[in-house]
Length: 127
Image (tube, rainbow, N blue to C red; front, side, top):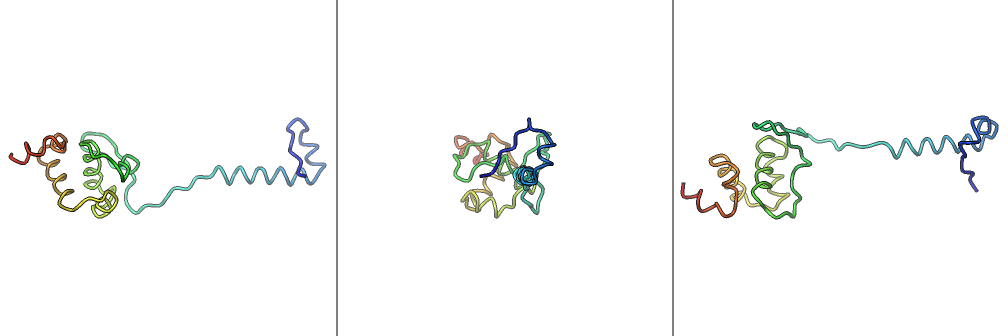
């Protein structure tokens, strides 16, 4: 049965007992292993600065099964424009057709974020 280290016993007790010393090293090594963090390597940039001064990252992208509102469409379009994700990756991740995504891009470029609202599609198509 392993002995739990008691900090009140001090270093002398640990030095005198080799089992306690080994256990102490095991606990220290376990803490090091669990405290490490791994960052997934990506080929492209992780963040991008937008024209208005905001910074977006891959973490700001909406979930794949999302309800599409204008602000989420805008983030995806800006992420593709700033090379955070590729166009093909966006189409695949969100299940979009190329025509639908291209219509978002054209509407955003011509009229800005308000054109991405579903209620505004007819209004901005006529212009």
